Length: 296
Image (cartoon, rainbow, N blue to C red):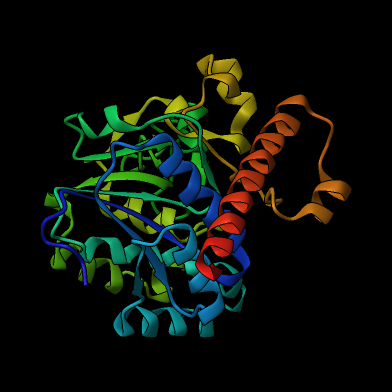
């Protein structure tokens, strides 16, 4: 049950394969945001008792919200038509945040984000729908409304401009409504992806729905590691300035065998992965100590 007395809510998604990422996201958020006294929520579909216990050991006040049957039915129907969606369908669990209407602000982050600093000032802004620019916007491009492919600005009249990443969003209560939730669920039909030529799921739906209301935050607010080159060259934004790091690339920092075989020796990548691994070790120490304490 969500608290009616808390002003803010921090939300992320957890699956079994993203447990390590979720632990680091939660631990680093709490470590750098001692001021935060809102609810902390995990969205999930199916998590083992053991996995839930690990998460609660790290964050005792954690709350779990299972994906609604209505949303789950739509997602299952989508997977039937697009089997390739199966491995990433959990990204669309984010739609559940629009049912969290008891809070003045809902802060959502993907579970592959590492917090490096406090985000308290973000909560003090007037932004009603704050998010960071996605790759297209960082390159100065818009997106075609039908295909979602990046294109030169002005190429089509109804193009989506200032498109945003759906992995880091601060959303005002005004947008967390049952009406918005229902509309987003209704968008989860094959026709939405009929002409789409990218692999986006949640980012596509949320940009189609909320185009024009978003406020783009400074790139350093959530540093998109997968776009490090354009961030450095065109936005003078470097890893050292990042408040948070989003590991938005195919290889995740907890996939050690893939890192060894597939990670280049590029300095920014190595440093970013080193920082995540250091945070993971800190998290593991906390879990170990709390587990020992529970056994006393």
